[in-house]
Image (tube, rainbow, N blue to C red; front, side, top):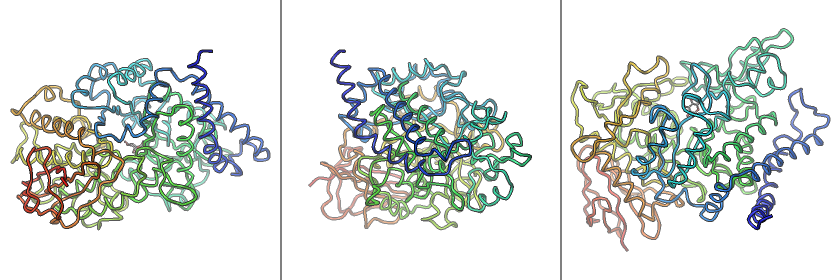
Length: 630
Ligand code: GLC
């Protein structure tokens, strides 16, 4: 054995010593003593559990041994710099493979374009083999081990990971862990009567049981996929009925994590993909994993234990890999996805390394529509409790709708309805070209649309008044604020060139989210300089990205803190560090002059000018980054 093989083995032993006890405790708590589905023997539970834990340990150890050397080297580098994803030079880019570049091979050819923008983290949206026909943009996975043939092959995915790593980029992939497609082999086996696979899903036998659960569940797609259960007569036993749990669309079957076999299957999927070169797993629909009667089935303690166990096990097999939670829930609940210390109940970095800051994204849009920064300031206070070793994913837009109801705990319903109508272009004075999307139980409809359209940019040939400068100023403000928040900012494809909505005719009825999933416009992307809206915006954004990379205060460890004493229409927060930074954003269309609290003097590092702290003018929708001098 060579010394590097020996040291790899010793390092693995060390990781097993540190992380296995964590996983073991969590898994015993989850699966020990819980009455299981009737196909696995409760009588032998203890012996069975030891045996099963042995399988888990074996899976993780095998994956660690099989980890390609290049990935093991990357792990070593990341372990030496565990804050790599918090650094101010990190920038993400999220896109649908087909819309951006046709195929995975096409994406590889576009890496130069992304590198020029400053991208260090690639997030292609779902690309694994998906259900044929409707598939919720790939979020209905038919096979976790192969790539959707339209987009490429497993080899193309490995090649993309390799190229990305060469270019200094990490690769993030969606793992749709809450549900499989009805097309998946497990669901298909259940449909033909295999009890082992039936027990992979939640199948209810009676309409009464369905009604009892529905009484406390919310709805994700109340208009297009009402309810949380779908009748599947082929799953029925003993002449009864059968309803399968489908939180999302009827063809997305929720997995039953009370069955340990499901936990192990998904762990194997994570281990497999990690060894293909995936660096970050976006755990789709994280809050929904565990179900219990009489609850909302969102963010239950067991869900957290599952994610914490995955984290501990990945820390053994692929210690450079990160977990990202997709939890679009109440702001206080989102923080819990970073983890908690069992003994103290305090935040601890033992769950997701990253989680979407959906709250601030939504509050920013709300702030621009209302001209009121108060809710965003309140939210910053609430979100500051996250563990310092974790980071938010900060963003302006993504492939989903903007869900106003996610702020229902903070903002009156009337305001949420007004903002929703504003972005649908349905209020007097609205500049927005978005569209309303479904809402749950009388809540404010959410909003679809590309960022550029929501800030009022008109595509060529669009009728009606257009104030391009104002629209671009609003878009730049959203990005400038987002880039200054504490986290890893992720650009949504096309925003860098102010790409507007997809043609309405291309949006399928009932799935309005395709309004903001247009094809990349490469002609627009080729426009450079000040002559066009796209060129101007791209240059301005690129400058922000470059300036950000050199600002130590924008490292993601310390949270953004709201600044007190500003006019209501000015959003302001402070970032601490060796050279503290203030971010100030005028949310309104008129100039406002603010006086900074005593002690703040400094330089606008974007405009490259010294500022007078006593009387600092902010133009319409202007944002400033001010480095504070002592
Ligand atoms: C996540 C995805 C969304 C999808 C849902 C169901 O929320 O972002 O696009 O519809 O999960 O998989």
